[in-house]
Length: 511
Image (cartoon, rainbow, N blue to C red; front, side, top):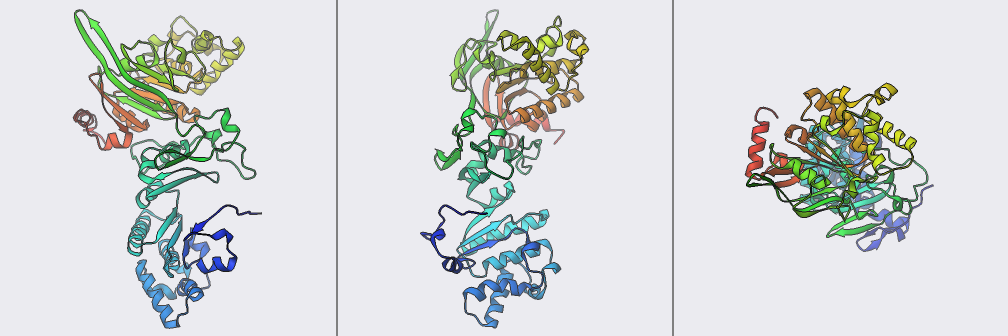
C-alpha cells in the first residue's frame, strides 16, 4: 500500500491539501508530465491526435477545428510532421513517440514540465535531438522543468540545479556545475565515475556493492554498506539533508566526503657536499576519502620524496601533514588499523629476501601486536588472496628472493593492505615491471581500491596510466606543485606551460 506524506507547494499552495477535483484542474494544465516509456504509455488503439488532444478537451472549450489546429501547432513545435497525427503509436519510431509525449505535455502550455527519463532506449542521434528540442522549447516557452534522468551528461547540459537521490532520499543538492565538478557525497561521486561521457580516457568502475532491496528501509544511512567512509554512527540514524556549503546540501553524518590527508607547506631538502638540493618546495596536497589522486611529473621532480615525507618515512624540514584531522607524528598513522600505508617503488628492496611470504605480509600486524598470531595469519592470507596469490603452504613458506618481480610486487601490495588502510600511497609501483605485469598490477590495485574503498595517492611518471585511474591530478616540477585539478580538466585542458609540454611529449605519438 502506498502512503503519500509531506508537502508539495505549487504557486504557494500545498497540492497535497487539495481535493482530487482541484488537483485535476492543475494536472496537464499547469503541471504536465512527459512519461518515460512511450510504447507502454501511449494507447495503441487511439490515434496520435486523439491522445495529444485529450488534455485540451479536458481543460479548454475548443471547437474541433480549433483543437486540430492546436495539435498541428504543437506537433510542429516538437519537430514532428502534423500528417502523423492520424497514425497510431506502433507506426512511429521511438524518437517520434517521445516527441508525441512531449507534444501531449505541452498542449495546454503548462508552467511546470516534469520530464521522466526522456532519452531511455534512444540511439545517440535521437538523444541529441531530444536534448536540443527540450533546450529550445524551454527557452522559447519559459516553463520550469524537472528532469528525471540517470544520464549524467544529459543532466549536465540541460539543468542549472541537480538533486541526487539514493534509496528514496535526496543525498545531495546544489548547482549542477558545482556538484558535477566537486561532488560532496560518495554516491554522487560514484555516479560520475560510472559515466563514460565525462572523461573518455578513464577506466569505468561502478559503485561497489548493491543498492538496498525492497521492503523496510535500513534504520541508518542506506548508503552505508557501499560507502568508503562509513562508521558506527552511520548505523544509528538516517542522515538529514543539511547545508555544508553555500548553495550545497548533503545528507551525510560526516558532512560529505571527508578529507583523509592534508599536507601544508611541505619542504624537504638534501645536502650533497656543499650543495643544498630542495627536493620539495612548499607543497600543498589534499586527498579525500575513496578518491584516487595521481601525482605526476618527470623523474627527479620530487614525487617520491614528497610521498615518503607524507607517510613519515622522511621527516619534513617545514610544513605539516594531517591524517583525518590529526597531525601525523611518530608514525602513528602507519601503525594502526585503518591508517595509511605505502607501497614502495622497488619490491625487491621493500620485501626482505630473508623472510617468508607469510611473515612479510603479516609483519605490520606483528609490529602493532594486533590480536592473536592465528588471527594475524588469517588476515595475511586474506590479503594475499585479495591480490590473487596462491594460498598453498608451499607458497606461504617461500622466501621472497625466489619470487618473480610481479609476485613480489603483489606481496608488497598485500603487506600494505593487511592493516585495512584508509589511504594507500603507491609510489611508482609498476616502474620496474614489464608492460604486461604493469597492466595487471595496476588493474588489480584499482579493483581493490574500488572494492575496499580506500583512498590512493598514485605516484607515477607514466601519464597514460595516471589518466586511466585518477580522479584528481597534481603536477610536480622541480619540487613544486605547479598545477592541480580534476583528471578531466588537467588532461584535457592543462593550463601551466610545464604541464602542456609534459603532456605534449607523453601523448605526441598516441591518443
